[in-house]
Amino acid sequence: MIPTPDLSHLTRKDYDLVYEPAEDTFILLDALEQDAEELKRLRPSLCLEVGPGSGCVSAFLASILGDSSLYLATDINPHACRCTIATARKNKSEVDTIHTSLTRPLSSRLRNSVDLLIFNPPYVPTESTESQEGQKHGQISGSWAGGFDGMEVTNTLLDESKTLLSANGRFYLVAIKQNNIPDISQKLSECGMTTETVLQRRAGREHLFVLRISRNSTDHE
Ligand SMILES: C[S@@+](CC[C@H](N)C(=O)[O-])C[C@H]1O[C@@H](n2cnc3c(N)ncnc32)[C@H](O)[C@@H]1O
Image 1 (cartoon, rainbow, N blue to C red):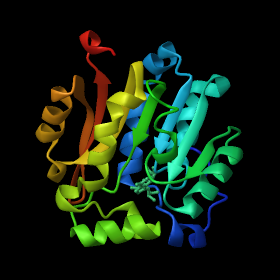
Image 2 (cartoon, protein in one colour; image 1 turned 90 degrees about the vertical axis):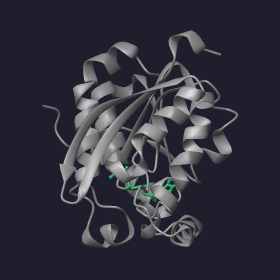
Image 3 (cartoon, protein in one colour; image 1 turned 60 degrees about the horizontal axis):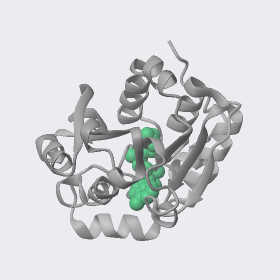
Image 4 (tube, rainbow, N blue to C red; image 1 turned 180 degrees about the vertical axis):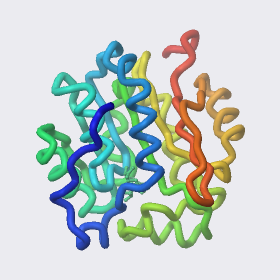
């Protein structure tokens, strides 16, 4: 069993500003642990986590893959960027963070070069205005408010994912049932991507999924 990263440096004050790891975080860790041997075999050289929050997932990934990969992370919440750097250091790894939305300033430079893309997004269905406010201000409400179907933020990254991923790249995405998993699969299949459910579980009122998305082997650009 791969240990959960040490987060003892983060305080209650940090969690007033940054998403505290919860069941959605832990199912993502479990999915990465389940795929750990395969991920090591793929030897990813560039890993990008969108929305690292506390930095728990990126630090966990770094503990699986070691320092042969470059770890980048983007978050709209500046405090999340600081926590991610601190969490990486606490766990003897290094993650470079960029305070931005999704992959905005990096998209063209990262074209076809992301080997591992990870996103535990704001997936809760809310009014669009709530999601837009959360996105605009980079505050903690931006951690969960997902707008229509909980998909307003995720859809943008889904649209970019094929361009970002390397030929054997993988995208691990957390979703809930209300996000409409068959719709996500259909949308991705139409642009030459395959979606598999790696893990699913109920946690309170949420039915959580971790999806593994990759390019079809016949459809590499
Ligand atoms: C549900 S939290 C997940 C945090 C962490 N990855 C985890 O699993 O515990 C979602 C994170 O995504 C960030 N976020 C929301 N919208 C974003 C966007 N457009 N670009 C980058 N990060 C975003 C939030 O600030 C928050 O840190």
